[in-house]
Length: 431
Image (cartoon, rainbow, N blue to C red; front, side, top):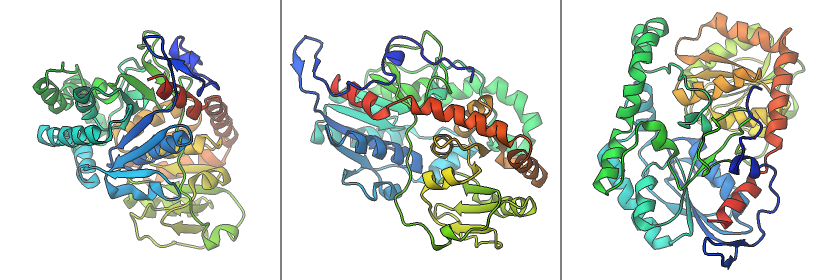
């Protein structure tokens, strides 16, 4: 897939690690119990940022004392778990998505200062041995103020040491006003400055507390005493000079636990797509997606994530609020999603190729690596046409179908080589 199977140092040492729970020694050489108090902090602005901590916490619960702090927006992720859940404020998901769509900084200084106050109170009350944050950017301040080791969970495509330095044009206001062709050169010129400006609110808060600022937003997203990449270096490679405190832990796969819908056993034969645009995708595209699927005679099972009241448009389309994603992806010939890593990695972990209808930069970055791996097709949601949808579907069910399946199965094998639970257990026990 063009990536590095191992980078050396901690990245390669973590691979396939099975001795995660053996006793370890502190920096002073004392033998320590590996059991730790671990607090996960989930920034509840998208389902993925809550689902990933829940999956990791569930994997650690047998060996560590774990709890998860988050706002209640995506409590679906906690169903079927016995995790201790703590309340914590996040900005509304809609506000976050509106800022993302506008290309504006995602947080104000005032919001981050409020976050730091809430974080510090939480950390002082809980006194964890380790705090692990998923997009809770304020922890780069608050964890240091309290003196608790901070693990930052993120995707490697945001790494300042990514092997890929070119950033795709997202569907922001500039793109929608000028169109991609005219917006592209302006974005290329403005992107370095924009990345610095996006780090500005957090830098202001850091300086207030005597901490140095970040050169740009990539450093803000990936800052931690340890940085945990929820990817593999085979799919999302980093440069050889990536710092030794950055670790690939492998993909984090979440699927809701729920009963199968009545129609699950009565779908007609023929090509089958699993369609889900998640908590951040363009659900207004569903009618056009359904029309293209029907014209290409592809059956569809669709999860709306409770964001659309679209009814089943015909005898070959089946709709539910939520579906068990792993089972749906494994059953499907391909998956149509928003291009975010949560659903994309869910699909690839079953060897199923992906069509990504991307809007924000994170989605474009994820799908860029999937396209490189020959495991999917990336389309721009903001101006995707019916003909582009039909062409993508034709490629997925026609002569290229076997090629896409081989690409997805190669990624599946790469994913399977990572024992995420064991890697994280070892890193937590060593903190």
